Image (tube, rainbow, N blue to C red; front, side, top):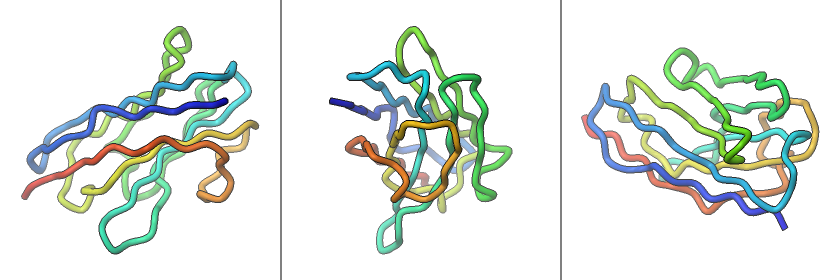
Length: 124
């Protein structure tokens, strides 16, 4: 049973930084892709970024490219989303998700496993 647990959310001022973590368990994730999505109040869930566990290739949405960075720690089975230069429009519940494979999918229906989400609030 795959389990994903996000942490690291909180309240930060515009221009600040946060690092989200997604701790994964239940599988060997070397052949998995990990994605991050977010959902703001009244909006649909949207893709943020994805990383291929093996090799570390990444892909980012245009809205976060250059500000957010994905990384992973194989020993801890944890993926990190470093978020810099945060803006009020980044306010959302952030979810990590995973699926087997190597393609960096951006659609939420492509992912099989989801965490419970962590709230990020950016004040202006």
